[in-house]
Figure 1 (cartoon, rainbow, N blue to C red):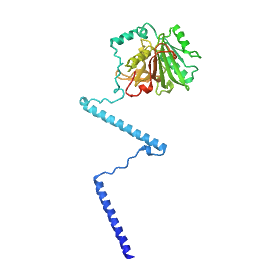
Figure 2: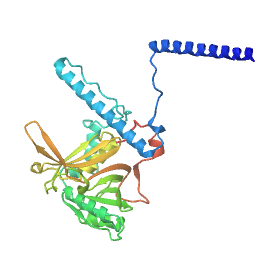
Figure 3: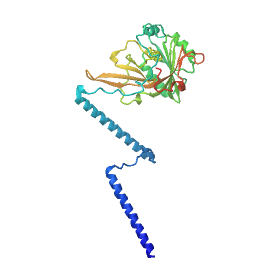
Length: 337
């Protein structure tokens, strides 16, 4: 019995010495190399509310850090003055855009000739005054009705008439007979405006847009007062290709040539990544150098689906351009407008 007990004691002592030696070695190694905590991801949190709270907290911290870095860089640039290095140009999808061979040069002789003979030439030569008919899909609901009324208050010399079951092929000849220059149809789905068809009269073309992100005036924060009846200024941004040039001329032909600057109202069609953002603002001169902006509304976003020659004809119409999503959207840096 005694030898076995002494053997157990010896093994215990040897084990203890090995553990002590390993602890000493680890402590010595710890002095030279820092021990980092294991990596942790917010997605590992099982509780949904806690996970959302931690994500929002992390997002807020990153935003604060970004603002602090921005202020620090601004102070450094101010201290350096003229010796400050030029600001780096950020990489965006827009400035990395794939070159399009149909990009328009406004000074090109061929482009000037095409513009002088296209369907909008009479408007740009001041031979016709815009007169717009705005209508809706059959039996519009409250939201579409309000949007139509607010849109008509932006576009001068526009008239709102509701369909009452009348097909577009019968509406278009009546519009031409009454000297309307454009027909604008607002479509809806599930009580929400989701489409816009713009037909230039009497010879076309016809553009079909998908409409999204519609905000009425009451839904816009810090909006200005109700728009006045002054004719607004029109700004068209980034319509650079042949197709984009045609769409820009369609929008321009909705508004009279001579804006009334006393109203200080601006209608903007801004094209970015083939999405057309519409905004309606009033500008205010705060001083000789500062200008304030008030959004009046409504606002919406358009995405071109097709451009058709002539007036609206869904069955026998000839299309100049159709958006084919699976063929055209393969490259994120390729744009068509």
